[in-house]
Length: 409
Image (cartoon, rainbow, N blue to C red; front, side):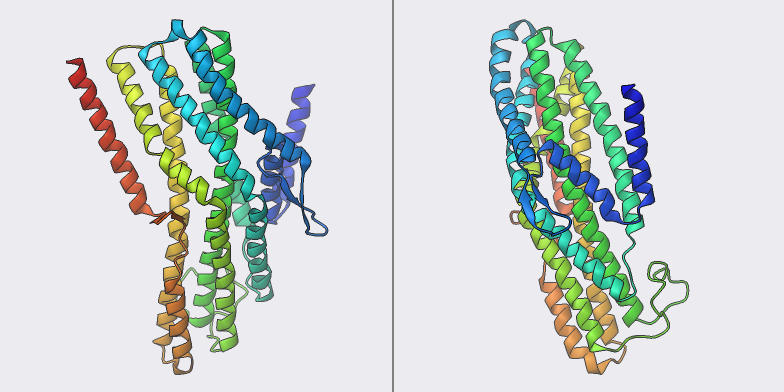
């Protein structure tokens, strides 16, 4: 009976997603999930738009935070007291890595609690942009965004569920003490819930921002640049007249106002997720390195007792690294669309539009001074950082392997 009710609920949610064109209907489902998990306790009244604190969600957040702290501390003493019979070299290393992950989850959980008020401000910026584009007869394609978010969500759910089952199986088979099993499995479940929630938040809001920068650049090209045969830029803005340019300062000022709205959204993203991005960047250096080294060590020593757990940890850390690279891709796409917009500005001034030349050049310089890409402290979130991260992981992995060989010799 319970399985039938669950299937009916899943089918109902799926029909709700497919039936609605509005992309925010899908995002509201994500926000509801965050409220249930306690990751978002600052809510907004749909009718009045007023923000309020949901005490149920806040209580869930406090309970989650207390459990994480207790599991990190309790796991340490449980490993020392009850894990002596399991205390091999790999057991100790794995338990240390799990406890560090728990501390990382505590930091992220506290940082998530600060985001609540700002996530509504970010969504308000996107909503203002969408309404303005609708007035200009160039509506943002919500259906495409909805389908992309749904596809990503399904892939994420399948991946996370697979890794969770892998962790439960590996821990159940590698730890003989029941207390250690319960503590470790519970800690990993809460850790995954905290990390997945923040990843979903950042990926969704950055994808929404990236899509709107792309849409604004396409809108400018259609309205201010000559139409070219075979161009695909009209597939998205079919309601805009593609055969004439609007040499109107009001229209150009509208473009700049819309750019200012998106720039404000990026600024709010940076303020909301700076701690999370810094923590994710720092954690992505040691975690894959140690997990991959542990997997190498288990194969070299033919220690197959911990191998399934270590392989699961290595695979999950690499997937976490790939999700971080997805954030880098979205951040660089925002900057790319901004640079393309500047190129369109200069191209328009080269079409003998003397009347607007000075105004557009000033606007291009203003946009060029704005660094809309997200930053991790002074470092920009771009592919240079990603390649540096990969290079550092490989370098330290080689050093650890060489050191291990020399000590064994």
